[in-house]
Length: 150
Image 1: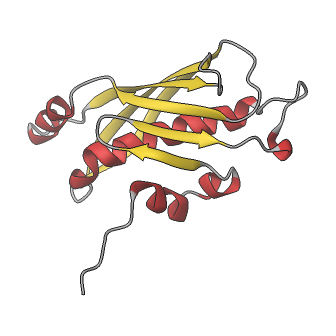
Image 2 (image 1 turned 90 degrees about the horizontal axis):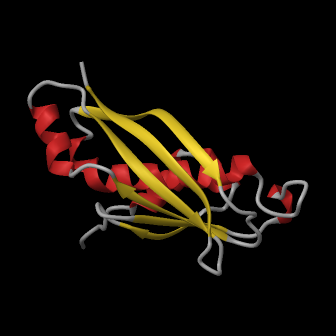
């Protein structure tokens, strides 16, 4: 009987309480792209009836974490992925469910080559947050590092 490994979404839901708290839905997770959705939930609305800025930040940060795990999960035995810094811009009013799509800002092979060379690589992940009509409501850039294990 063969066992299947848990998906990145299942791993994040099990280990990151905010993923469960916000009921984030993992739509796609690959080394090229991660897509997560924040359902429309009145408990997480702001004063204008859309998702709270903190919930959208968490959605985008979670999407970035999903792509980092998908792209660098095979490095976890020797390095710990850590978010270094993030910047988010809120562009348009978000209403209803919102989706975050994350992409790596550097080729994964370059990042691994720096790790192989004994460095602590940093790399950006870019995230677009969109409404159901496709309008971009926010953009996040988050820099991650792979910290070598001691």
